[in-house]
Image (cartoon, rainbow, N blue to C red):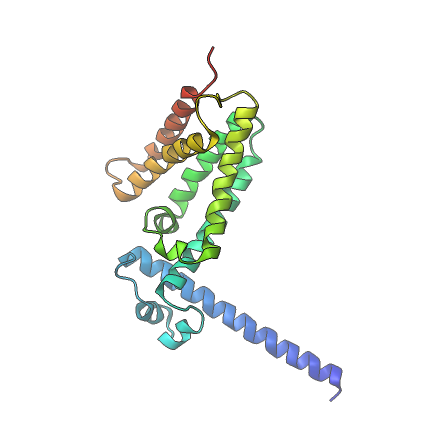
Length: 215
């Protein structure tokens, strides 16, 4: 057996092991997401995740340090998808105000499409996120997209930057979309699904009108 052939065999074996590890990790993450959706953070344990995924607890610990590390990893995948949705929304509109409305629509649709991830990302205590320094990055990146869009609207003269800062207006717009989504997810009888997006759009438009330039 030549060295080259031996190297190919070793490389193929390594790639198979890595694929198996990644498949195991994905299965654990899927089980963790399902369990969180069923029992919430307080009732969540790695032992239950292992049982749901069909692995031993030792196998789970080989991929994740503890409960918070696993929950963080589930949330991280949500933040990555969230960022992608917001980024794509920016390319569907051409004016600063249209971009803000497009971001609002993307935000709401993400929350309704991924309710489990949304609850974990925005409706659950975030100690498991802040404990992981890298976990701040996807949240900050998403927030920066909205801040930048607000700053563009102020620069274009569509919003009055003399009356409100970009950070304050960003917080107001975020609240305008988070409110309807979180209300629907926690109390759907109070805000049925067909009303979530129209309600959010109305609140966003009211916020934009409130801080439009005088005259």
